Structure formats: C-alpha cells, structure tokens
Image (cartoon, rainbow, N blue to C red; front, side, top):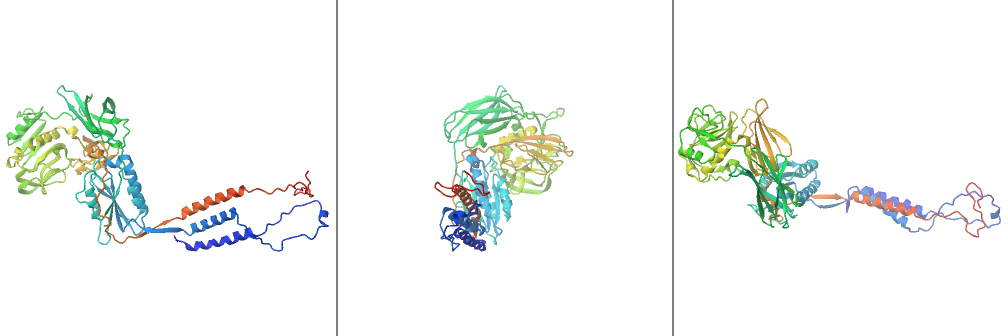
Length: 617
C-alpha cells in the first residue's frame, strides 16, 4: 500500500498525548464539607508523590487509538496501483441491437462500460461506437470523463440488428500510428459469426443472460375475395414454456380483437382474424400478460395501403412488355383515350413534357427535372441494389445487363440500382408527384426477360400509385427510411416516441429508425405547409428475438498497445468510513460505563454532603 500524502502520517504522533492522558492520575474532586475536625487527629495525609500511574490498557483506549490510526491513514490518501484496463486509446463498441434488451443485458453492459470510463486519466483517450444497424461514432478521442460517461449513458437499445463487422471497422479506422487503439466489444455476440474471426487486437465482454420469450414475428393485413380485411398474426416461442398467450389487436387507437395462440417451444403459432379497418388505418398487435424477458418484440405494426391508381396510359414508344405488365396487375387498366386523363403515366422514350401526375419515365430525352445528363456508358451490369428499399423487396436484379445507359448527376433523386457509379434506376419527385426514372432503354437490356421484371414492375407501379401510403411496407427497425424531397421544401419526420425532426429538402433518407413503430413523414412546400404525408413502419427484427448469446473469438493478448499504463484506486474514503464507525462504537461504549456514586456506603462515618454544604439524610 502506498500513500499520495505520506506527510499526513506524522499526525500519528497524536497518539502520545492520548496515552499520556491515560497515565495521569485522576484529579480529586473538590467537595465542601461542614467541618474538618474529624481529620485533625488523623495522620499526615497520604498523597501521590508522582502524578503518573502505570498505563492500563482498556477497550476505550484501544478504540481511540484505532480511530486515530484510521483518521491519519485516510488523510494520507492510501492507494493501490494496478495495471490499467484502458490503453493510450480505447474504443468501446456498444451493441444496441434488439437482443441486448434481453433480461437487462444492455443495462449491465452500460454499467460495465461506465466502469471503464471512470478509470480515465488525462493521458488516456476513449472513443465510443454505437453498434446498431448503421454503426456510428458517438464520441471520438475524448479526454473528458464526463463526455464519455454522457455518451454511454445516452445509448438505448433499438429493435434492429447490429452490424458488428462495420462497427469494428469504424474502430480500426480510429487507430493512428502514434496512438494505437484497443478495441473492447460490449455485446452478446450476435447470431452469426463475423467474417473475420478471431478478431485481432480486441477484447470481448460477453452478456449472455437469457429467459423465456414470446415474440410477434409477423403481422400483415390483406383483403380476401369477399373484400373483408383480415389480419394475419404469427407468434413465436423462443424457449418459453408451452402455454397460451393472448395477442391484442388495436386499430386506430381502439382494441378490435383478441387472439389466443399456443406456440410450442421453438415453434410458431398463426391465426387470421377479420378487423374493421379501412385504407390508411394502422393496426398494432401486442402480447398481453406474456411476462417474458424481451418485451421489445411483443409488438408489431401494419397498415392498410390506400387504393392504388386504376388507369394507366403508356406514352412514347409502345412496348408489349409494358402492356403485358399492366394487364397482369389486378384492378389496373391501360387507356389510350386522350379525353380520359390517366391517374398514372408510363413514358417510354421521347420528351417527357410537363409531368403532372405520378410517372414512370424510361430513358427520356431530356431527362426529367433534377437530373443532369453528363454522358453515356455502355456494356453495364447491375452491381448494387439499395438495401432495405421497399420497391426492391424480394427482387434480385443480379445478371441484368444493359447495352447503354445515360450517366446522370443529381442531388434530389435517390439511386436504388447502380452499375458501379452509374445509376440505372432512380426514385424522385417532379412537381410534387412521385417518379421513377430508368436511365436505359429496356428494349436494349435483358431486364424484360428476367424473372424479376414482373415483380419489380408491379412494385414500382404500386409505389407510384400509393402516394398516401408510400413507406407503408414494414421493414426491420434500423433500416433507413427513404425520403424523396422535391427540392422546394423541408421534410418533417415524427418518430414513434413523438419526437419530431425537420430535415433539409435534399436529404434522401432518415437513418434514426431504430425504435420499432410507425414513422410519419411529411413533405413541406415552400410555404412550410404539409404537401404530402407518408407512413413508414419499422418492426422489431425477427432475427433478434431469439437473443441467443455467442462468444466472439478474439486473439488473447493481442492488444495493439503492448505497454499498459497503471491506474490507482484510492481507499481513503473507505478508511474514513471505518474511522467514523469506530468513533460511534467508542462513543457508545463510553456512555455505557458505570458511574461512581457519591452516596456513602453502609458503615461509613462520613455523612453525605451536597456540593452546597447541605446535609442530606
């Protein structure tokens, strides 16, 4: 044990006066008596020739010496030195995926991370990374303990997956040659192994608490052949006891139905029930009285789309593939009557003219507003599809080849399919209406003979027609919400917790979608009035409901920084608390000591005299 203020140990010399007080003879008490005649014949009075007496060790003396010792040691600030867990630069990777909500895993991870932050000194840097669906650096290269503590305390569990590989890559990117980094992973490990395991120069702190869990893993709304809206609900049992659970359906704030399901452990149970809802209604399914260990997956949301357009007109170059696609979609008809304006236009080549309705534009000349033609590219293949994009759900364009495409630049349109850096399919708005733009002629590609073409075309037409329910297709929490601003106003997004965020006109996505629920998107015009509004649903990720912990393989002892610093832990407060406890004990014992009575004993010749000189019987 060492001391930060060893000079305070000199106060231990106060023990000498304390011991001296115990060795001094007691001073006699002065009492007034009525007469001294009785002592006149007595011999010479005996008095102590020495004022000292032999030291008598008593419990009170020992306690007082102990109090003094503890008091002196606390002033000297004792400490113990140990190897610091923090290196020159430590990156704390905090997993905020849905499975971390199981039985308080994330709460314990936060407390553990805060313990690391409390060890910071002025020479150590700490960075914090939030490992969610879209990992981000919360704070970087911080020397301030309060800043790191605040960053860790502000993190919350989401309902989505965690991209641990990307979070680790971000942590590696913070390392510098002059200041190597240590990586600490606060995670339950995730479902699947990482691409690069064992992870070098890292430490994994596992969180593997588990418990029974039921989850709503699917909720959808469909119209049957009789026109009745039915809700499909699926409940999964992730290791919970086999017993009935109740699912409550709520539509537009009112409870409309109850379902009882009994999934076996490791299985699912499904049910379908009619619900009295109309277009645009939001339905919530929640488990009641489930008492499971992961409440975040006990709810799911779905919405009924508004009716799509029913009349479509193909303009420009006629295409049998487009006509066949339109005929294959129920309740959708193609018209060529110029006196009957269509609700949706498909413009194949040619001049798009004035766009006054939702439109699918295919290699027009010129491109629609918001796109700048910069050149042409030939012999292209699809290399990228936007992840989580609803119009591309279950659509794979791998193997699609394009002979020639326009090279366009834009700040307003959202590319969803690309060949390298060349956009092939873009989503946007023109004059306030939704628009899809193909930079290539489908006749000069093999897209129309691909199995994905009918599904892609149907999704694009549904998206164009359903402007009031654009983002209504549920996606896992954490998947960014695509935004299609027109460039003339702002975008307002209301989260499920009621928080509202206003974004710029040219923002193409909203990434803070980790909270499960319904997001309401409002497009504001130049006068800041709501022009159009959409819904986006983000449900708890089904892959996170199982919440199975896994140990991430790391290379032991492979931290980048080989030289570890030392940290000190002061014990002064604990020693001071011990001194206070001993002082209370000493005070209690002192109060319980028997008092010497002044009343004369039987047979005594002296009367009992009060200090005032009055005799008492």
